[in-house]
Length: 572
Ligand code: ARG
Image (cartoon, rainbow, N blue to C red; front, side, top):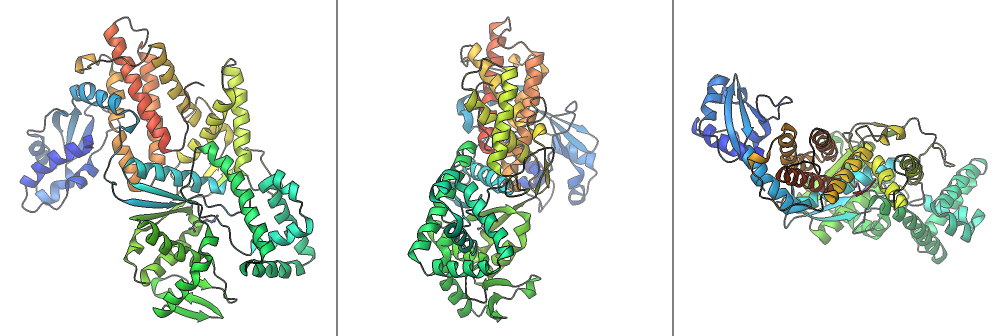
């Protein structure tokens, strides 16, 4: 699909390339210079000509004049010179006659692309540590990871979502000791992760008084490494219990994974990696541990085996990457974790490169900032950790209270409250740039009148109710004459930008681009709603056009919600 920016950039490029011998810039680069001015009085888009003045050896106004010739067409209505800028107007005929029918016809696939076709992306996200709390720190990886999966799918890639569970490590020795000493089968079945966490916490409390418990835990873990039957059974059960519980959170978010192969899956594959590293002369022994020296690259060494010979996080990641390349032949493998793990990824990506794998360049780490909580009374037995399911539950409860006040007769209240309560948290989170640290304030996330998820879902529900009041989407052939109010043109222009937002979100691996765009659409739509009579418009043609416009907004919002794991609510 050709975006408006691309279309303009290609035409500009034709002109620009005729003005110089060896054009140094591509059409894509010109597209990157195009701006949407904050005030559209002068134009809908603007091209800053000073960007070309050095190369073309001309003053910007002269360049603007040269570029403006012959630009008008079905999409560009006019191009006018304003100092060093070339201002462009989008043709209303295009907006009403082409774009609107296209959005109505394509539905929620408007804005999608197919340039990823035939390529595969593996996305490693969520990946909680089993039998430890699924806390708010995992919210980022879960929702950013899933949004990126949806975005990649939207542009045609085949996506494999992997939940790389932290299901291996010495903590399982501790869990086994704790369960054998103080655990109760039924209590764990009933209490699930809470009970497992309680046992884990108890282990640490007791181990402070009785340090010998640590040795016992190490012994139990060694037994597990040697496939001791009883310990294997317990370990598998802990994982099972944990996944069953995570599943509830994933269901609330509408997230599924294509693979749950966690760290334990790679345990057997590490020795082959170690042999390969040794054969390639990359392995060094340092204080009994096996490492890859990365001093040359300004990084501390990458630890491969501990001094007791056991595998460790980075070595399992290397084994996993090799396995994924063999299994999925990915074009990209994306890892979403907190920025605290950036060095870890830089280190082992380098090791893969040193091993001679050219696909090391296709490994991408997507870091995000930390979350702190403010104004929420949440605390748990595990200390000051905020458990995600508790945060969701509190949010859903609050939404129910608000809804009971606003709309007491609402049907399916529970289902809607869940979609809105969870959506509020997801939206609040994703509307921030991912790398920024976030201070989470539940009350702000739930403000129906602010720039929030509930506000966006409310706007979506408004489009649904208008369409249903109108008795469906009318079948019309709109044209420029149908645009009678400035908010209609503004709305169409805003909808025309969606494909460009999808591209920016992918380029920057930044779901916040979509979240913020949703707010733009909602703001313009609500202005249109307040300015214009829609279903009640006296003229049938005006009414049909406005309902069609409302349906286009519904399609774009629906698609955009899907890209950021927010459920659609037809009624609130
Ligand atoms: N389990 C890890 C944690 O909770 C995240 C794993 C990320 N994925 C990876 N392949 N290292 O911190």
